[in-house]
Image 1 (cartoon, rainbow, N blue to C red):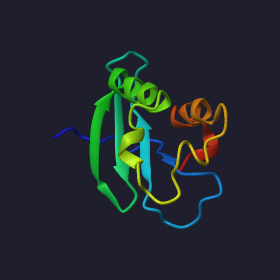
Image 2: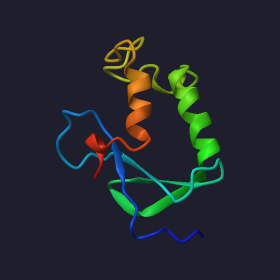
Image 3: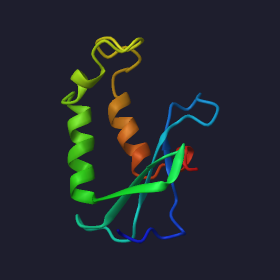
Image 4: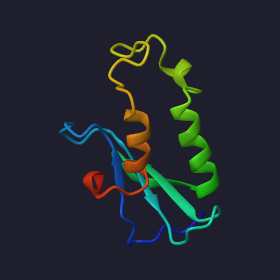
Length: 106
């Protein structure tokens, strides 16, 4: 198991108007700017359970989300229909937030 640095800045993947404890996914970027730099993910309801990947894989995942490659996972979920709630440019803006926009920093 990888040691998780104690001084990470966690970014919550939640709508700006969201209140309460979630559960939400949180992302933290480890030191380094290269494609092998660590990226940490956790859920607010279980913050001690941290999944680690690298920047190359994280960036590929974000691009896949932006391209709609995972939309089939939410088919039939109440309140999610054909991009409902997603405005033009919102996906790209969300990517910027996931890369450390202090507006969503926890």
